Image 1 (cartoon, rainbow, N blue to C red):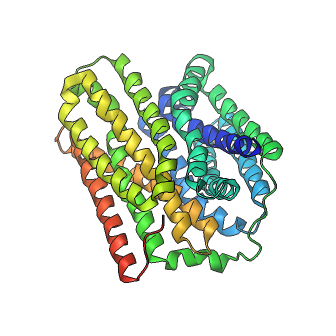
Image 2: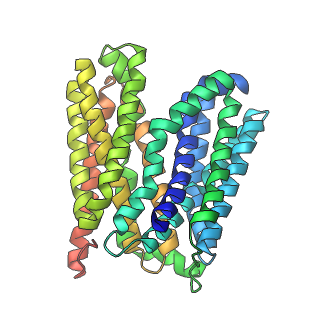
Length: 389
């Protein structure tokens, strides 16, 4: 029971982070009006958060590897609460931009440290399931937290959504204190030792597979509204249904990713990459059929979530002694994938290739990620090392 309650506390942090990260997308018009900027300028606030994730994960992992992990998790959530409170009171676009950047800084480090704690608490052979339960909070946020925060922001003012996000972070900190056992840091960790991660070819290949392969999902997700309405011919009211399908796919994919990871991390990575490419291609083919496209949308989300969890497990496996940095860097690479997929998808639309073209870009990115994983397996065999399961 204590183990499950600990996972619940850690997953609450994932729920808080997922809600905070994605709710801004649904509140862009209100935020833009509130700080008197254009919608495109308000969209840069999303990029500011992603930049915070990319920068914060390695920096905090590098500096915090020796700290007690429960205390570090509490500190990260306290910082997350503070940054969201700053977002709520920001009176100018510049201050809000800084606040959103600061909100992203604890993101990757929290998931990395929480994954290490969850894996250490799990019975032998169930580490994958434990890490997946931490990640499932992020998935559930897309089904419950983001719609609720968006509704709140639309009806009570956009600042109320950020106050709610800050409250969720405070709740997480309290639950971690109450439910997660004290967990020492790595007393032997040093900054130099953590940096050895970047001397590991397998770590680089895993990060690259995440940054490129996961970009395939965001190439589609970033333009889903336009595909649903312009290609599928559905009304604007259909867009939330497709977003719900993506959210449910994230929950389902995260749930099955744990057992799959316990079976074989590397085979799960290969299978989910190939599946994501196939389902993206299917989505591009059936997008004009309207509601029929819900099925491949759901399956793209399932396969991408399996990929995310097993990338986390793979990095923890190949990081060697640089465990904290290795676990945290996953979300840095994934946010690079977010930006890459959205950017390339926008390029093909601007080139006049139509709104189905980003899904085809996603196919290429997913297959590129698969090729990188295949190269990883080849290098591992040459080094007489079997890919870690």
